[in-house]
Image 1 (tube, one colour):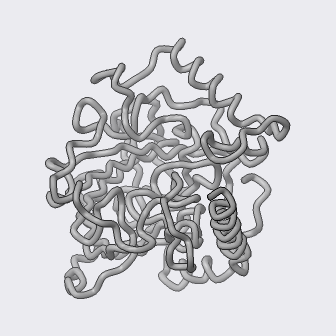
Image 2: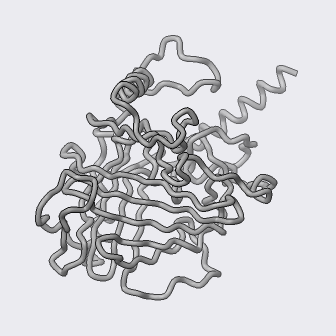
Length: 338
């Protein structure tokens, strides 16, 4: 939200400790989607630094609707229709809200962060060419998700439960992490991310869920395969004007659509003009999908999104307590209905 608390000093201290610097002045600008101007840091690396947001892609679906086939962009009329639908969803219409959760609840309009120039993309997924996930393997179809790894209330859809303890909830519901690649895809609000660099590291701070990553680009060896983390282990290098980051060593707890510790991500960061950074994310997990798939995220510079702010989520975990109380109330209602 625009009404956000100031970023905790400890986060800035983390960046200062690393010796990270503010964005260098760009050498020029381009309005083309192709890279026609190279932005450089004082030490000569491509300059990705700045605060970017993905609000323009709020209404873009992850998978392309089948009716568009391999068409990647909407017509102006289709974009206007989609924008109108999203505007209706943003209205705070508490009177006559649907009961239960058969339909998504509308949210207060001031919660929503929108761009004045919404993207006309038909999907985040750009490969396969139909913009849809490849088929799942038989093993993935039969796989039983581990406790607390399913998408939850905050994670994007309602998990089946049961919700008897805190670790029955997804990590996003617990305000810990959305995980990769999920954290790249925008939601209602707090879709900003900041990139800062020095000669040896690139650091990312995501406003949603207070997540951050510190990516070595100095050629060091990856972590031991025995070490597993929620965000995986990232190692980067430059290929021309593009930062290429390989992410491995995931934990099963940050399961993404059935893909856990066996997934491998390749991220490609490219500054395509003064106001745009593109992040191409390829997910490769042969135990989950029959082929790799790739999504493309576009971060835009927005003068109204001038600083990353603290994302407090539910401080003191009061929200989690109330969700457990709601689960007990649902249990009681189910017993009474018998």
